[in-house]
Structure formats: C-alpha cells, structure tokens
Image (cartoon, rainbow, N blue to C red):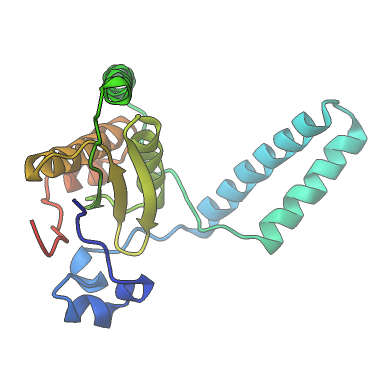
Length: 219
C-alpha cells in the first residue's frame, strides 16, 4: 500500500500542482519569515564556531595553527557552500521540552519492541507505505527538527523533504489499512506540535491551531 507521491520532481512546480488539483505555494499560507541581516550574521557566526570545533576535534589537538586553520576552512565553507538560512526566533519552554523528551523516549522503546516483534514473527511480511504529511509550521528549523525526531524512531524514516511546500514524505512500516496511514500522519503532526510548543515562537504556536492541507489524491 503506497500513499500518493508526486509523479516526479517536476510536480513541485505550481503548474503541475494546479493541474493535479493540489495546492500551490500561494495556497500554503504565508511564506516563512525572512531572516534579517543581523540574524543572518549571527547564524553565520554560530555556524563558523561549530565548524572550528569540528575541525579541532578532527585534528585532536588544540593549537594556534589548528585554530587558525579551522577558521580559514570554516570561512571557505560558508562562502563557497552557503546553506539556506535557519534562524531561531522562538523561546525555550522547560516544561514542554521535558514532555518532548519523555514522550520521545517512550515512543522509542515502544517502536523498538514493535519492530523487533515483526522481525521475529514467523512468516510475517509487513507492508509499508509512503505518506505525505504537510506541516503547519513551515520554517526550516521545524522541518529539520521534526524530520530528525521522526527518523530516530524505529519503523519510520524520512525519505524526502519538500521545503517549498513544507511537506515531509515518510516511509512507515507495518501498514494494514487506511487507519494505520491516518495514525501515522497524526503521529508526525503530534511530534511537530510538541517541538513547536517546546522551542517555537508565540506565532508558531498559534499556527498549530490551523488544519494542515491534505495533499492526498486518494484515501
């Protein structure tokens, strides 16, 4: 059983989406907030710091030569291989962070037991599916965090991220019917809600009240 996937990468264009009866970029709500010059420089400084730390760890020795070499390599990486800006505009909420950590640990244990049971079940041939899950908060940070948490849980894996439309394409294991597809979608949206409540801004928390656009063409 396989949920709908775009017929190809060209399906991301607005014309293809419109012809398929799917929402275009204009229908997905307001675009993510732009990153100001000050925020961009701050993010670059943080990225440079981490690159220098990684460089020092690779050499295994703290010296002025290695430190200078790490700075040079880090600046070169940021100049010649720029990444999309990912900035943090929310605030940390200790209570919600604790809920996120506890629920993630519980889901990790439950999913591990479930996958292990499938592996040792005689004659079991689990059916898998690929589902498209549009997120309600389309920032790069939320996409990355949600994708990471989902991929760390056994039985689910992110195979593609549509950054433009804020959609995660998730491979799920042991699908027996449409109710399992709906349950998997709800699980991804629940993870998104916990992450946004833990580290999101007030505006992003309000966006959780909106219903995600259903991009399926078939149930």
